[in-house]
Image (tube, rainbow, N blue to C red; front, side):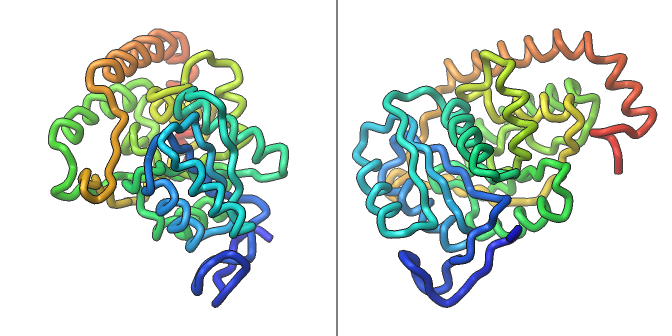
Length: 275
């Protein structure tokens, strides 16, 4: 079946969990040293969708054991464990390739740190099922917990992304709560040595737009958990901003070469500029 069904109970899941698995769409959660929040995130996702796959990216904080126990108790959760930390993009690619080989066509990615709204998984999935040719992107709605520097800083990346895609309509380039078409994203990543770490989210949407995948944006709240709430951040202000700067430099150089084709597509309403 395409969508998942919510029932009152199911093996390994609590009341109200999704028990009938989708054959086309799955939730994919890359996780690195997110502590107890990783398991909480997987449970929350599992209550909304089936199946949920978690890719542990070389975690060393003991969270893998808890995720193993969850996967053992719930057939709707599948766990992959990478031996060393390779980066978010590498973890996502590992999951995508396994999903493709199993017959899935789309994956909703979400972080394991509790920032992304599991309750919106069904609506994002339904938007993707209705239009499988698009990528469904979360448009973050920030609350008071969001660091002001992070909120303002992402505007720079969003501005560059808008230019690099000639205004294809990507509302936010960094928010990782998204539904991707698996085949297209693997094709993009297979030919790139980049997109394996913090540069994944932005470069993925730019290159998918270049490939003709139209973005659809849906509002989604963001919650930055405090340390007391179990919040964990691996963002490095110095190193990751350097990585993003290098990424946008590469994309801009390639954008110049792609500009004639992108301009023609925009004028003729070809993907990704179709309505």
